[in-house]
Structures are given as structure tokens and as C-alpha cells.
Image (cartoon, rainbow, N blue to C red; front, side):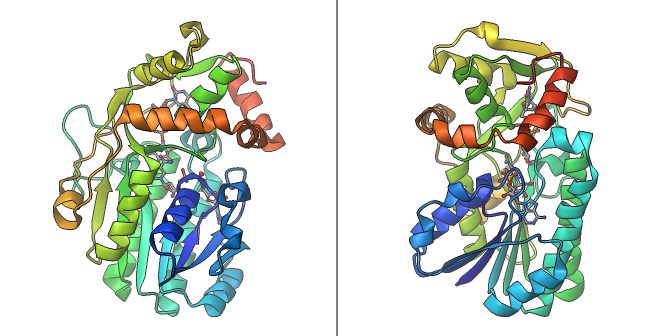
Length: 340
Ligand code: NAD
Ligand code: DAU
């Protein structure tokens, strides 16, 4: 199979390319990435030796360039990870989220129709459902996105389904819960905790710290995406959850304990605007129809993740670019913390 992966230099995209190359060594993989602050070619070290792997630096919103890519490589499948993905950034600057996450997706959908793509797998998120205090969301639950990020993801989901209904695009969607693992940019909660703890910096904890997320080890998500790509029913949505619900405060305490760092590093700060209290997904459908369940208990995944970050200080250091620093300097000083 010839698979075009977008956003393949980001966290989940790069883990997925490694997974795909291992699982299906004969597949041809085309990786399109704009290399924003979140994209890192270093995540794909080693793959350059693979014969049937190509990287093209391009913006999914740039239709003429993307058309040339489709013309040249004629992908059979498209897996769209490319997105602006951080909620706090979407609150400060929503416009780029609408551009990449909605218009960029629309560009890929148009080209996929035009070039007869056989499967279009769109990577979405549990955040499109909004918050739930009790119970779990199913794929039929109403969408109530709370942030500009999740609203842009919900808009893209609606477009994908509309292209399936109107033009017959063979599309599929996965909606996963919070991923964690190697190569995650340290603006997201778990790598941020590890990074700040290793550097003896304060760790901002929003609100009362009792918001709940369902943590999914990235490798498990890659397996789910691969299974949906091969076995999913066209036109369907699949929730992908980790069965690991924890309050944020418990996650910080666990990591500090594992790293033998003091709890005094925790800094309670002003809550995130529109902060969803709890996410929880029913995964009955993907279990029943595809046979996927998460494999990694949170303690195991967290141990591996902490180990990966402590063994890769160079990777962490490289993420602290000018763009990262200028955003966080302002953002942290608004929270009353040092931005260095
Ligand atoms: P990420 O921010 O780590 O990576 C995004 C990648 O997309 C980067 O490599 C970036 O350079 C690239 N990109 C951004 N704009 C682009 C553009 N216009 N053209 C081409 N490339 C562009 O994100 P992630 O955490 O790996 O998330 C990947 C996808 O999974 C996103 O669609 C996100 O909404 C979804 N998702 C993430 C999580 C999670 O917990 N991280 C959970 C559920 C769903
Ligand atoms: O649920 C899936 C989503 O998970 C993905 O779609 C998003 O791309 C991804 O960013 C993530 O969104 P969250 O907002 O849940 O993740 P984040 O890592 O930003 O925050 C996790 C929780 O930790 C959330 O309740 C906010 C809290 N938090 C986060 C940061 C960065 C803090 O308390 N302090 C922080 O500094």
C-alpha cells in the first residue's frame, strides 16, 4: 500500500510512521509536514535508510503544492494527522487552528476525491464531544467542543463525513483520548511535567488540579489507527480510549515520585479558560468490530515515557527553540510563573 501521512514529524504522526514501517515493511510511506514548532525531523531518524520512504516539507493548506504531491505519488491511502494541536495556543491565537485544521483538511479531502484515494483516515479527538462528568461518550454522542482547537477538529470531522456522504469519499475517523509517550512536545502535560521536574522548574497545575483525562499510550493508538485503516468500515467513526482515567494532580504526583522530585514544584495557577472537566470514551465499538483494546497500563506507559525523556536530554533541549521560548515566556508570566 502507498500511504500518505500528513503531520508525520509531530508526536503521534512520527510514532505512527515508525509503527507502519515496522508492521508493514513493504508499504511505501510519503510524509508531508510543514515543520511548525511541533514538527521535528529528528523524530524520524533511522527512517531515511528505508527505501520506500519520502519526506516532503509542505503545508497541507497549499493546494497547488499538495496537488503536485498527489500527482507524483498517487497515494492509495491518506492518514491526516497534520494539525495545530495545543489547546492553550488555540485560546491565545485561534486563526491558525481554523486554517490548518479545517481548510487544510478540506484541501486534502478535495485532492483525495480528485485522485481517487481508496481510504481517507482522519485523526480526530475525544475533545470534540466536550466534557462529561459521569458516564462515557459513544460515537453517536452530540458534539460540544469547548475550545477553538476542539471546535476546529469538530468542523473538520463534519467536513470529512460530508465528503463521504456527498461525494462518496471512502473516509474513516478515529477519535482518541490523551496520548502520551516518546516524541511528545513538552508543552503537553506529561512531557511538560517531566521536563520541568528534570530542570527543577515549577509545574503549573490549572485550577484545582482535579480535571480528569483518559491516558492512552501512543503505541496503542498507533495500533488502533493501523487496525482502523485496514479493517474499519468506510463512513464510520471509532473512539480510541486508554481506560486510564486520572486526575491531573495524581499524574503530577506520580511523575514527581518516580523522579524523586519534591511536591513543592507544583504551582497551582489560574484555570485554563473553558477547561473541560473530564473526558471519557466508550470503546465498545472498536473492541467489538475491529478487535482492538488498549494494551499498556498507565504505570508501565509512564515508566517507559519517563525513561525515554531522561535518556534523550538532547531531544528535549532541541525543542526549546526561540518560538517555544517567546510563547511560553509571555504565557508563564501571565500565570505568575517564571517564563525561562
Ligand atoms: P503535534 O502538534 O505533535 O504534531 C502536529 C504535526 O503537524 C507537526 O509535525 C506539525 O509540523 C504538522 N503540521 C501543522 N500544521 C501543518 C500544516 N499546515 N501542514 C502540514 N503539516 C502541519 O500533534 P499530535 O499530538 O501528534 O497530534 C496529531 C493529531 O492527532 C492531531 O490531528 C490532533 O488533533 C490529534 N490528536 C492528538 C491527541 C494527543 O493527545 N496528542 C489526542 C487525540 C487526537
Ligand atoms: O483529549 C485529546 C486531546 O488531548 C488532544 O486532542 C489534544 O491535541 C491534546 O493537546 C490534549 O488536550 P488536553 O488539553 O487534554 O491536553 P494538555 O496536555 O494540554 O492538558 C492535559 C490536562 O492537564 C488538562 O486538564 C490541562 C492540564 N494542564 C495542562 C498543562 C499544559 C495543566 O494543569 N497544566 C499545564 O501546564
